[in-house]
Amino acid sequence: MKKLILTIITSFTLFACSDKVSKSDLNHLNGYWEIEEVVFSDGNKKEYKVNSIIDYIELDDLKGYKKKVMPQFDGSFKTSNDAEPFTIKQEEDGFKILYKNELSEWEESIIFLSEDSYSTKNEEGTVYHFKRFEPIKIE
Image (cartoon, rainbow, N blue to C red; front, side, top):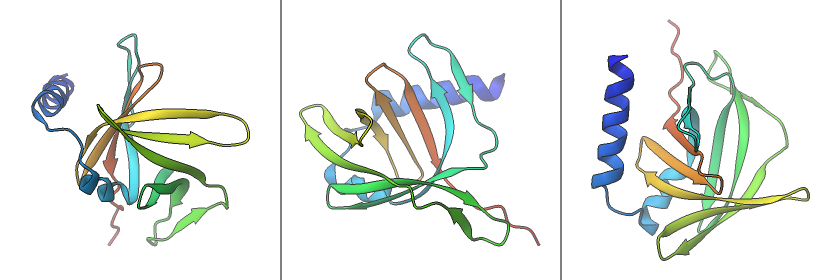
């Protein structure tokens, strides 16, 4: 319970005191990310302790893709050929990630971005918190 309260206070402090995301910060999105927590618009939360599938993001200029990968114990990743392309659009209130495929299109606002974590908020008000993936080292 103490850990949850500390996480909430830390998240609030980061959001309340941090500057807006800058264009130069966007390079931090490149790499492997695992979901840490989802906060739904009604206030309910879902924490993710262990992730067997993580996201790989590659961004060049304002275009990129997100791909689901499965980390392996030897440090490699299993993946499929599926990738979700996106573009990033700068708006007055910050940056939005715009996704579009043959079935749908949606957008997420980048509300926090650092080297080690980032958070997005979708059109329904759901907030997704991600942390940089760190492989498990078995010796």
